[in-house]
Image (tube, rainbow, N blue to C red):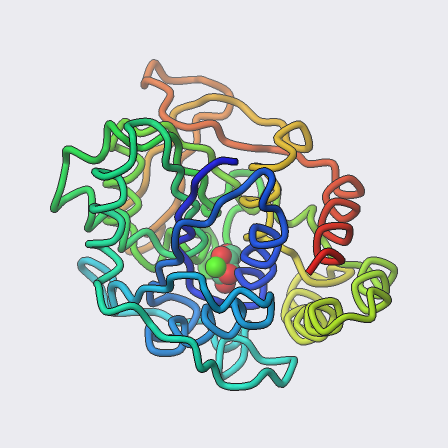
Length: 311
Ligand code: BDR
Ligand code: CA
């Protein structure tokens, strides 16, 4: 199994991504979950991450709290999408499992130093503040990262928080610039892909029909989370952005993309956080990321439903 750290700001779609990972021990070993401020403030994302572990029956998972604000900007949150708690929809009990004492950034650094080089994969589901801070504090770990698989950015689908920026990159563009410029192997799941991972009524019914606490909670999460995208984009249902990251670890064949250069806009207030993706390779800038463009949505939902049924 691939050893991973999940860096996250749950978020209903983050929650589903975590559940998918915890349901797939043959392919994925979750070394720890690091919470970051994003969809809601840090205290809530650290709480929500633990609620999701308990929902999965995995209260033994190590959860760490990380950075409570972006590197150089005020925190922008997304309660308008995810609700007041970040995990509105199901009524889950308050978590009783502990939050680890260590800071998330120290956990990332210590883990990458302790494990053999090239064996730990970072899965980033929120703003990149924790990972960028770890890279700044301990540049020696960058070369030890197996791969960073992240949800963020957009190309044809442009933006969801500003006309040109996707939320995770917009919240901390400086952190994104550090990560995209780090030289670590990157796989990017932009809105171009995640807006194809749409929950339809049939797909939501399949979650609910699992009849388990996990299946019902996931159906309630997507019921809540979909209203934003339905109103805003007229889409059929909730886009499961972040589960694309953990699905990629299990079934990379579901995704197609290109190895291209991607730069992050950090100067212009108008286009702040834009992922300038050289999809057509019109520059000579060196490729730094595999930027996904398409996914097999039916295959993705079949995988997700089957795995959630194991919890
Ligand atoms: C991303 O932003 C958050 O709202 C979601 O959890 C996802 O990670 C989508 O733009
Ligand atoms: Ca997220």
